[in-house]
Length: 79
Image (cartoon, rainbow, N blue to C red; front, side):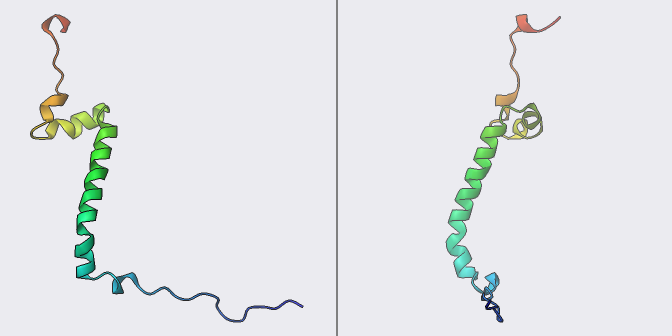
């Protein structure tokens, strides 16, 4: 004979908001900041060669924006 399960075979998971409190969040905050910075740096590395990103974002960075301005020799310019 086949035996059927009459009850639910799992337990409900407690709410996440009951485990995430302010002290717990403050303890994870340095990790969040570090990994967010690494993510932004990685995104910048992979999009540095794209002209759309150069013109839209990278040229407007205050200190390093001049790096993406094209510098051509005078003899290379068309007349």
